[in-house]
Image 1: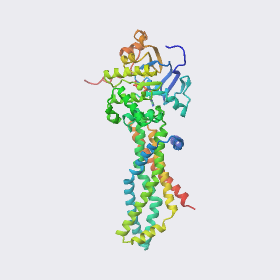
Image 2: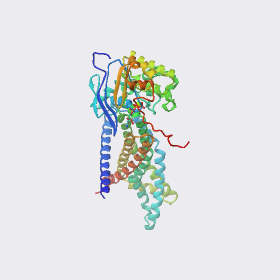
Image 3: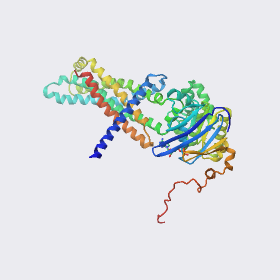
Image 4: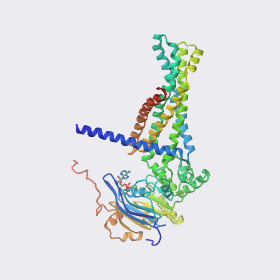
Length: 258
Length: 266
Ligand SMILES: Nc1ncnc2c1ncn2[C@@H]1O[C@H](COP(=O)(O)OP(=O)(O)OP(=O)(O)O)[C@@H](O)[C@H]1O
Ligand SMILES: [Mg+2]
């Protein structure tokens, strides 16, 4: 019994410690994001890596999500003869939730893992120490460019994902379910509100920050050779995914509860 | 030892432990400007840790480190960066940036630290590449495409590229063939002479140590147990030093080795 309480206590303390470390890491990273010098070349490279090279993954995720969404809503709504609501359901769910969340999760797998592995390898092979001895701050050189790129590229990626997702729903509705193209498009556009798009983009920016932050944090603190880097990669993806799902709830609450 | 003036590096009573592993237990070492000091000592005795403490990469628990008379153990941020600009370091593992090619590695401090234009930095990097005996074609290769010895030499070129006042070499000739080893030794001597740099090197190779140093210090059990000019080391009556430089298995330094062959049936 006592050992159970001890174990619980230790877990709780570890949790507090980790939260503190992440908060400190975030504060230091952010302070380097806004203070010169800025490494524009590195920021650009990261933007291409995150924004451009994630397009296929995010696009494929989005199109199939949109398609399956139309199909599922149809089988459900046909029972109440509410098929006409399908364009609305598709566009709102894609814009508010599925675009940013699924896009974020896919990018977490792709980018978060790669960042943790790259920075982790630099840590265990003393490259971060070398950077420091060459009078270059690793936060400025490695972490700030990644955070900036994540924060700015995820909203753009999400815009693409939303468009492709809605297009997927459109394809299924027109060619499989026999909707009228013009009506479908008008319904979609009329129903969409600025707030829907805005909430989707805010979510994407937050997710982009979370993904790159977790990748950098776990990579930066990895130790113990290849095994340590492997653990850092796993932790980066898992923690980013969970934080995405949690923060998604709270952002939704801020935007849509009244 | 030179007499007047502020020491370039002054270490007093430095302590560092990793958990229960007490690595440095009161190191004292004074290095005057222009000196070339070699640290010798068994594997795992804390030589690399000592260098990393001076660079501020590892924080000691206790003790003082002064560079040009300035205490650096409590410096932070840009003040510490200013101190680091004076120092070039060759890591034991070379620690090249594998996202940059060879010349970008060598020119890193010039481009990032001094804001030199890329073309000029590249020209300087090519000259350093020649100094360490590498062909110009190597410049555009990436670290993963180099042999271990080549990596070491690129690391050396990177350490001296910004012409620092203080240079640390962590095992500069390990992994090189004997001829290249001498070339590198000569290069280190040249850096010290021509740049007027102060050098602190770690090596296990006594021949190389004698070529590059004016003074040798030996680390054992977390302390400097012997410190004297290079010419004196062969005449010393210190049993530890004698055992080390002659590489004998028996003597006061006991290696912790278990005999695994005992008891195995033949
Ligand atoms: N980051 C670290 N974390 C924990 N222990 C460390 C760390 N760095 C070094 N050590 C320990 O400190 C001791 C000294 O290590 P160091 O690398 O300084 O040895 P060394 O004298 O350079 O040996 P070698 O000649 O083999 O390079 C070792 O016992 C090592 O296990
Ligand atoms: Mg070492």
